[in-house]
Length: 588
Image (tube, rainbow, N blue to C red; front, side, top):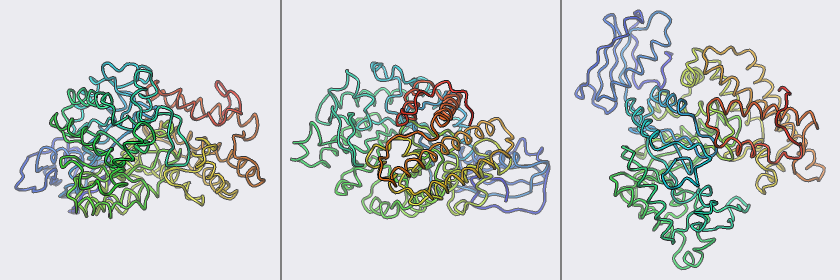
């Protein structure tokens, strides 16, 4: 198989070959009559060189990307061939969370746009809560290393040249604890003193805006206005997900009178109208609407519902039919399964991404948005996301050509790090399958992540009561085997060298959690508490110190400093009985 990703819809090999040197300056043309599908192209390589005909400028660009892949994967010659190619979905996006502590450096975002363009991804959303430098709101973003609106404009212009549309993605209703814990904004919270979560514990922090307070809408409108003034995109993601605290605080009586759905819908409609007033199409996360199906027919007609779901079994098909029947515009939004894992969840990611593509094609989703979150401190490094991102880009472009996972290891390495062989991709795929060694498996996470996050939370403590000694042993044995394979891997590019180091950290941190997990499982088996206990005494503390030091170094190489200390505090919070870990010289 030729080293192409996404693999094209139609590829015909002619049996000959030509020197790759003759492909440097292809003849290009735009001709919608010859290439009838938008963003499509026809690429011919023969003895006369290369010719690209695109339906439009984007089609020519994607033909060039394919030609670049052919040249990069060839030693001296390229096979003669013809390719007819076009995307299943007009919009193929990637959403990266830059608000859960980790804000990428500017150069990293620029390089990401280049790599997305190579994967024929044409939309990028940078999810923000408090990490944009909005004028007049310094109290919120002062210490967060925020992106400026001017930098957003620069990134948008850079992306536009590569047919990557940078879409604003600012949460404007829930997930605003970074705002509502500040003195200047606390009065706008629905639940200033915290709320009961759907996951069995009480969050002591405020979460959502009070939708009945005029000041809440004034704040949201101001953020919409500022972002709209600098964005040339035709879309605007307003968030509005997981607002489960509405009605637990200031709006308790109103929700009892009118219903939670009605209160939510009114505020959603106001936000959508404000965005529409700027000539942009509003987008919003669809979980609350799905919790209240009576809202589906009342969604603003010009809005796009973002149907997110991150498990292999998520009902994209049934929900897609609901949206199609109601005439609702929608995207499917699967995930990389990288967050809340340390290692990734390869099998879940691939099945989730493929199911979303099947539903998108069946029920006419306008777009396919691969999501990549950073919950609880964004501990996972960049490398862990690339399996899901690469495969998702493939099935968004053509499910029929890319759904079978053939050649995925090689595609991951090339997409992530220009690595010419399969070794890096194979390591990442295998690391992401370590979780399969353990029964039971848990939604949207791994047990070792939950153990490190906080075993004193009710849901996390329940997880550890389900983990067995054999679960711990099998995970540790598989990690050891992956580590042996990693030791023999010789990276061929600087990015691959960095990713090897990131994988080593993931293995080391997960090993540490497995050792601690063994202690916790033994304590639980003996009837003891699941609370924080150190593995291996002082030796365990020293190795944790080395892991934290490496976490800092990897972070500083690619991310801004603003959220680092908060992320480190989360990483070490439940292990405080081990003692101070900074500055350790131990190795791992």
